Figure 1 (tube, rainbow, N blue to C red):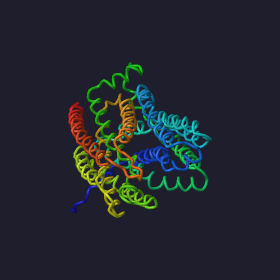
Figure 2: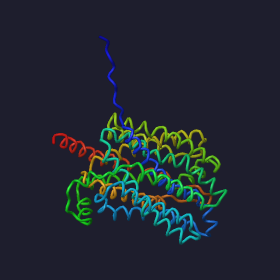
Figure 3: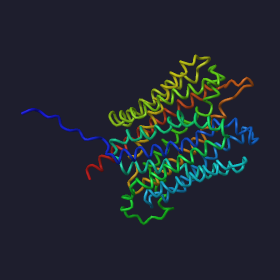
Figure 4: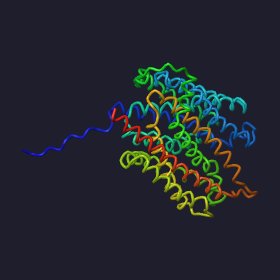
Length: 416
């Protein structure tokens, strides 16, 4: 009798693969809408006759309105079918982006960005709640790896296309591109995504305010929220000055930046799913600790660099983004283990809101630390690096507390 190799079941069903793909595409469109604005800065400041300070408000208005809407939506997030919730906020996001495409002046563009942030800022939390409902904890690292690829894809594919459209058809055209693409995605969601409403079977007599209050006051949840604050702070501090630092401190020219970001983005796309797979294989906290150690090493090197050849800057950026991806994917997967089923929507909404607000505040704090000289050189960038390193150490300690609670909770659930 011959030995037969047992047939291995696939990790994901066909429908689960569709859910991963559609959530990644939704995230891609939302992140692209946020990211495409920064490269359009020079063109917008000329055409709308606005100052750099006014343009910074256009950028930050999205983050702050997204944070506010996340807190407001938290009380209602577990009261509805998550498919309907996803479609509601995605429709609002499309309307907001349409208003951006139609905006003739600064004030209407600012208002349009606020509207877009109110709806777009909640999309991530709804997506993570769906992931938590549909996928078991053992495979969430892989799911997060694919969904987080949207960030890199928007950088590699979206920004160059957006800039090309803006240069040829005006700054409104990238927003029209996003609107057209998002409408097609919304149609697919309506047609093929099944209702996600099992959490509604869990009876709860709490009103929206009580639900929000109960979620915010839950001690294990608060620990996760505090870890998110520091996670966002460390991540957003270096981003606003990336281009300036590369040009004025590292000695690159503006024409080399697309190559730098393009190559970094391609490697992020490649490594995202791999990091997700290893997150499930070696453990969420183990991967987070690895990513933190690698990121700390690269931040310490990067923020102290002087004139540096392009190939070395690319290499450092690629390794740094691998470290950052390892932290983001593993922490996202780990944090999904914390909330109870009836609190997932509220928890994810608050967590997303905190992330948005912390990111905005981190950018402001970074602006207070870094000083730009008359030549464009950035002084005190190494101090910024030190603050980021300190935040990473504290985040690692706090994530360990989150991990211990997740293990305890999983053991209790298994015994039940």
